[in-house]
Length: 536
Image 1: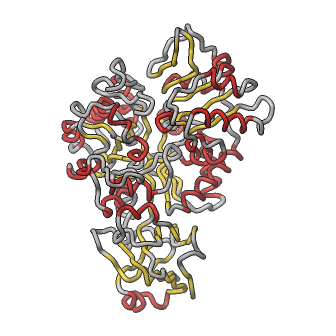
Image 2 (image 1 turned 180 degrees about the horizontal axis):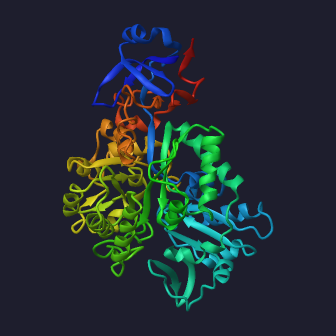
Image 3 (image 1 turned 135 degrees about the vertical axis):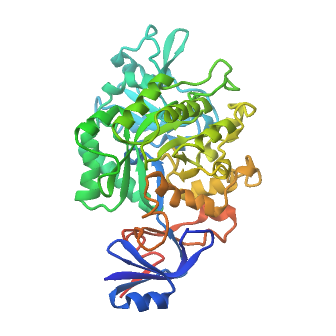
């Protein structure tokens, strides 16, 4: 017995503009697509329910190719510093939040972004000590590659003016004394001290994140969470209990950070196994972020000539990590924002080729060069981009990166023209999880308040190309292009239903498009009573 979905704009995403009248699904799979009368002829006896789409637009289920799912839930449970428009507002927010904490409890917040402030001065330990003097404070920057802590945390970690920078990290100092700012590997100096969240907290954060994702039309995500909450097994257990045992329907593809890969392998887990909670590639960080000036560039930053960023690993270390992944018969997913980081990642993948049938992924790839595209074309690799970054990073990023040396900046059209497979994600909670914001950024390359000022307009994508990032693109990134990402017989019955036809509205209206239905495995998990009608 199954469901007939009809009376909407049903786009298969097989090719641009291709629509069908109806879709028949049963037991979580698409069994037929085409004209309604033909499907009723072929499956009429098995139709137990008809869903009237009421003229809405149905697409293959959106999948975010790069997110931190538990991190998203955390950000919804803790102070949201991304909304703060000044340093003063950040400090006022944490002061108020501290009053609600128990004695001795750490104050942990995230999302501050000095590039978006009216007063873009850096937060320091002195600022934190002044407003929250009685407890440890840890505030993560929006990129999560930098954080600021107060004096209590520095004292607990034994970080003083004599403490040297660890490999791949930087301790901010002024006049020889720590400022409280820690970048990349320097964060490892405090990591053992940060209280680990309980399993109930992880499950609460995960449920909240999944509910949020489904509200924005996401039927699944590729997420990286397994190295940040103390125990790999407890974190994985949260996914198991919520998404499998409690049947909180959602698809999670888990990247496995290299820091827990040995534990993962000893436990008997393997690449692409696990059902709706499956394991993906080994995650490796090659560099940091442009916002914190830790992205590794081939030359100096325009606004900081003494700085070229930070390589989280040396090139030999990066190659060794990729070699280790091959020994474990898994792909790699390498975070590389700067062009030199991308060059190192490519060299490591060239020297240690992916096993037959696997694809690696290069995550972010915000700063590239033509010679790197030529090398990427020869590799089995998916470029995992986050279009929403453009709305956060422009125009300040133009003052940071030398375009003569690295001309390809957020160059999504160039990637597609080179014949590369490209997937789309948000990197939430670093950016908003709503795919419409990423699609809008990819199509317009303009800030909403300046719609006529497109940045590198030649790199704009068509709406079809932008939507494909979150459908067929994400499917290719996890080797599921034969079962997900399109509305075709044999594919999973995962759908995103929109209140407007995204292919026929002006580009500036994309941000106003709302999700009125999210369907996973043929089950409506969001919007059953809003915008679509199920009948017998």
